Length: 122
Image (tube, rainbow, N blue to C red):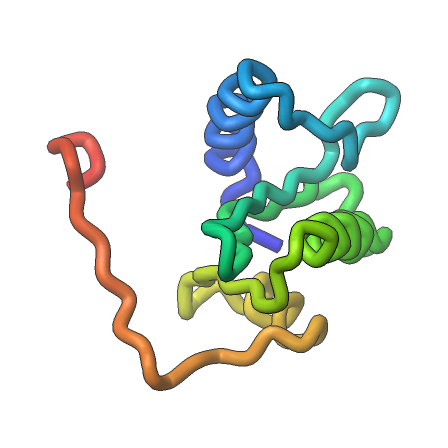
């Protein structure tokens, strides 16, 4: 779903360590105890967000991202969340095709903004 599985894996491990501390880890996307797919999500009580999604190149086109998405959406819905949002780079054709095929619509009424908090992310 992303073109940069390595970066997502790094962010995932950082996030998973934090989630373990909070007791919020669910084991999905594992094959023989190896992480082959990742989808990180959360919510603010009103809207759900998918922060990162990736599947190892070796395991793509096997429905893993779709299964992960199904689990994420069910978990969000079980917590009373009725809408979910995400951000995809315009040039990520694979990711945009995936999300569109699962009913995620591009919004034209929003402006995405961010602010770097350190020189490393400039």
